[in-house]
Amino acid sequence: MVKVGVRSLYFAARAQVGSVEEALEALRKLWKEDDTVRELLAKAAKEGYVLVDAKDVPAPFVAAVKVALARLRERLGEEKPSTLVVKGGKGKEERKVMTWESPEGVRYRVEPYDLAPREERHWAYRDKRVEDAAKWVERFLSMAEHEEGRSPLEEALEHEDNPHFRREDLIPEDLEAGLRLLGWDGTLRNLQALVDTLPAREKAFVERVRSIAALVDREGGKAQVVAVKTPVGWEVKVASKPVLNAVLSVGLLQEAVKKDRWSTKEVRWYLEDVKPFVPGLEGAVEAIATLRKAKYLLEELGRGRKVAVYRDPATGEPVYRTPVIG
Image (cartoon, rainbow, N blue to C red; front, side, top):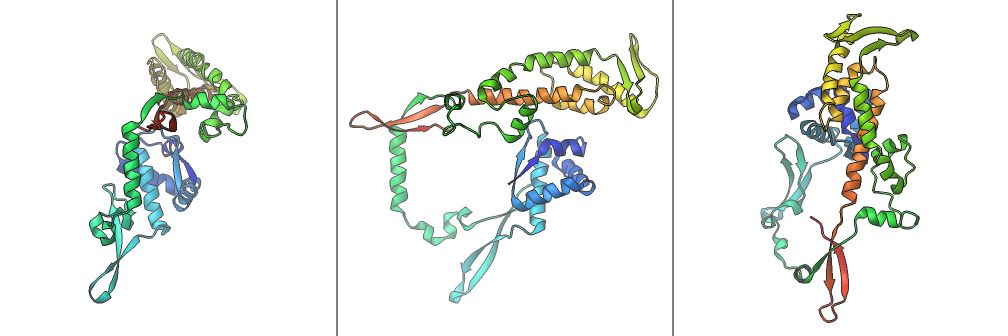
């Protein structure tokens, strides 16, 4: 299973997308220009994939990635359309291709068990095992009680010191890699302490952005001030396109961080022009984005789960417990 980083593709495409069609066109250009992207998507289409790091990416772009991979898989010929044997007159067999095309234009194979029961006459036979299982489920649902169970985080913390029961699947791999760069030692106990540093990091980042008063070109080992902020605006000393773009982006960046809940996605866009003249901001915003994801994950894992309990009608003793989904 190949992991496809949606946010990385989004920033590599560097396109403002308002629809799936625009996003597909941006991906098509990226496919032609970037050999690494071409190899990644081809491998994902052949071996199967899972989309990661897609939380802050526009929905049309995420949908476009799925459509592109589906079309690529079909073009590579890795997935042949399924067939259904249909018996005609005089014992003649006809093999029909069973496919379904989505509104986005992606063609999917349809297996016989996806069809309505009327398509296969032997589906009409009753299976007593299924009927018995259905009755048991109905009886369980009618007699089950609900209890407030412990959260996944509480259970994981209890067994963290026991290697036989330690949970290794709570933190996604891409998030774990980002946390390791921030000094996380891999334990859930210390993860909360690291997440608690988020407000201070956000405050320091905002203060640093607001204090930007000069742009300095450090290429060639010699620092040169190319723009200075004055009470009436910016004074540009070197009128080049990168400098003018940076001056414009600094203003937009300083306005963006005034919001109570500013977006790391928006900030990243502005930093693309600013970072050559104000180093260090990109690493700070990446750390904030990583800790925000970790904070959300801990909040989700810390929610208690409802547990359905089935008791023996004769003794009242609990004989089965299962988490309630949904």
